[in-house]
Image 1 (cartoon, one colour):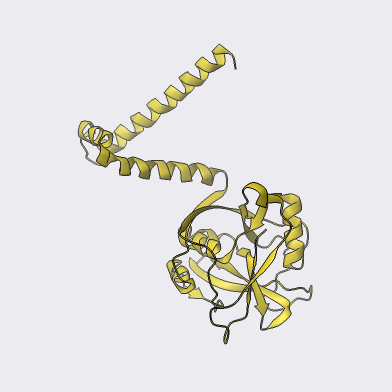
Image 2: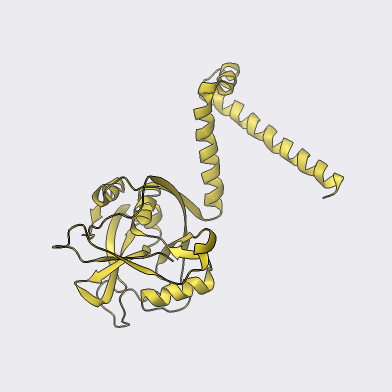
Length: 250
């Protein structure tokens, strides 16, 4: 990079920084604060949390501009607690299972629309690998974190998580997954189930995946990005009433 380009970059950065400080001062005054005292307190150790909050909001805003939704998945919660965090107006019966994961993890979720017609989750997975190499479908805990963090998103689209599927009514030829949807006119939000089984016959709840819904997807990291589809079975935490779960790890 030439010296001129370096100078232009510095001048541009200084202009952006000046604009940020000017707006910050203006907002402090709008809220009736003392500008000198507020700026001084931000420079103290106790001001770090406020700066972290500002930085977090700025980072999330930059991600949203790229169509990326950052969520915090808390694996210490049970599945019912994850569902309750979403504050849905109505929730379908989602089979309980042993959550795979630990701690609290930040996950960046994107929404992807299928262009080609697919009639089951395997076709959709193959299309995802072809169109978005290095991505996987979001799991149920990730979908629930998305619903809790961005409650209005599902009023615009139906959102599915093909990363976690289970047999429909015990029929292993058909699979279900969780989905978020809602009514934009009333603002009512729902957590439901969608039939994504191995058939192209129209059935109640069955979606042929032809652009009428969006899929929550997550970019993989490192060597896991190009691993072929792998299905891992997890036994239900209440096997007498719930079918087995399957979690697609790629």
